[in-house]
Every structure is written in C-alpha cells, then in structure tokens.
Length: 305
Image 1 (cartoon, rainbow, N blue to C red):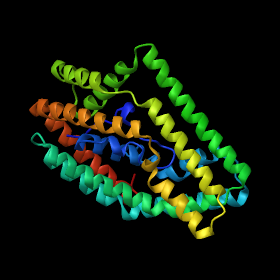
Image 2: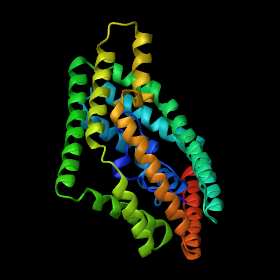
Image 3: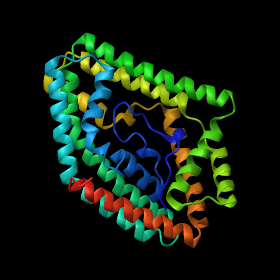
Image 4: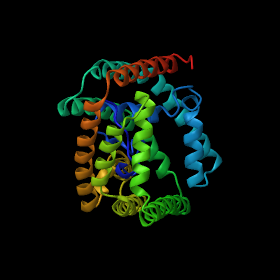
C-alpha cells in the first residue's frame, strides 16, 4: 500500500531532492513520494517547469552573477530533459507494479523491496545532478557562500520555530493525523473510523525530530562551509562537496539518526495495519488511482502533459 510521508519523519532538504526518502516504509509512501518528486504530475504544469522553479529557489538563497544564473538555468534545463527521457517511463512501470501488488495486503519484505527500487530512482537523480551542483557551489565567492548558508540557516530556523509552536500548542500530533488521513483519502477514497484509530495510535508513538533535524542541518552547513573554504586541490575540494551533497546523512547527529530509525519502524507498523484494514472498495480505488498516475507519468515522458 502507498505510504504517506509524515512531516515529522522528513529528512534534511537542503542538500538533496529526496529529503523524505529515508522515512518511506511502504508502497503508498513511495507512490506519494514519486508524485512529490514529479511535483504536480497530474497536470504536468509543475513538472514541465521544474527547471524554472528550482532556479527560482536557488536564486532566492543567493544572489548570482549573470554568468552563474545562465549556467544554473542551462544545467537545470538539461537535467529536466534527461529526467523526462531517461527516468519517467521507469517511474510509470514502478507505479504499475505497485498497483498489481496492492490487490492484497503487503508484507514488510515487500515494502522493503519496493523502497529499494524507489531508492534506486533517487540515487540515479542524485548521481546525475551532484557533480554539476558541486561545480556551481564552487563557483560562488566567499560572500555568496556566506549569503547562501545564512539563507539556509534562516529557513531551518523558521521550520524549527513552527514545529516548536505546534508542540507547545498541542497541535503537532493533530497535524500529523490530518496529513496522513488526507493522503489515505486521496488514494483510497475514504477513511473509516477504524483507520482513524490506527492513525491516531501510530502518530501517538512518533517522536518529534525537529530539534535534532535542525542540529543536523547546522552540522551539514558547517561541513559545507569548511569544504568550500578549504585549501585543498580543486579535485579534492569538489569531491568533498559532492560527498556532502550526495550523502548528507553522514552529518546527522546520533540522536537524530536514532529517532529516525525508531520512527521509521513505528511508521511501518502503522502502515502495515492500515494496509490490512483496506476494504475491497478502497483497494479498487487505490489500484485505479495508481494506474491513472502511471498513465500521467507516461504522458509526461512523451511530452503530452
């Protein structure tokens, strides 16, 4: 069954496009995440403009020169073209395979297998984009680097403060429950009272990770600053930056890694219970939605959306 990414389980987003991948447990989470990766694949409007949107995001972090802006936009346009022609049909087949599997309740082993396939898509994207992303970062001046890292720190601070407020106002768990129930309804058409209870029990066991996430983000930014300011040979510096971009998990604090692992196991148990609770009508709706998503992804690959 597809899984629903919970805000509390998201990984750092500053260094990778797959910030939520480590929290995924079952096929439902993976399918939802594929949709997120495509950013609006239902109409193609956002996917077809991902290069522009990504450019806007980066330019909001740091003031670029005309040459850097041109290089960034050219790279993003080439990357989107590669992704459309090389990756999307594989996504569509993946979603169709999951549609076949959700006809009956899944197993933990099946969830892990599908997660492995999804991780393969993410790795392909990261491997493709990391070298040029590193080169772009290395082209920044010291002033630009300071500006970018300050912008990232500000975004992290705002996210942390938002979560602190939610917990203080006793709204954090409510948001998690509403988020999961909304995704479940999106894919299955309905949410039963029993399923609401499963979600409530599962969310009650989750540990908020925002403080540990913020600390891990700070460590990553510090490591990136050190790498960019290092006096190493150019090739070695680029390798250090690429490593930070492709594997930011190494900068996680021990506390964050442990909480993520515990939450992932709890989340997996909740998803397995939800999967087992689906009615025949919900499974039919889920399979129909997955087939529809696969068709939309194929149209995107062919430039028809």
